[in-house]
Length: 187
Image 1 (cartoon, helix red, strand yellow):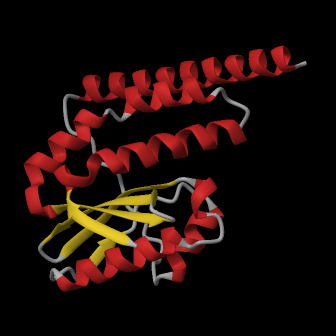
Image 2 (image 1 turned 120 degrees about the vertical axis):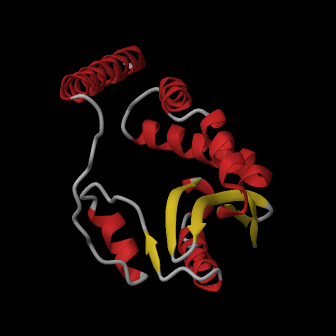
């Protein structure tokens, strides 16, 4: 079963699935789930999604796929004119295992985009992950390279880039340290 609605109506369900996905991914990587969820809430707070949904109105659509009545997978699609964006997607791996809820949501997203007049749908960055690339190609997606643009004074954009690298390095160290502590405690 797939439920569609404006972003403001279903965001809480999307958010819950996203946090479960974050915790499951962390556990597979040997990272404490509590730490990963706290970091996810900091990096992508629910208020950010709520503000975007409020600003975009009908152009921000959320779909939730249920398995046995439980929200199992979700997607946020941004649809505007001839352009669509499969912006965010997450799933509870414990619920969707061999159920193809993610496939169902992407198929519904593409149908909805076409029905609303979209000629193009950006399926999001794949980060070089083969399984994600294959998933998108299954639906006709194809790789497209493009440049990222940053606007602002050169010194400011350079400083922002340096800050992002330092923040990422510090977060990686913290996560690795926490994972090491967790493994040490488990012994």
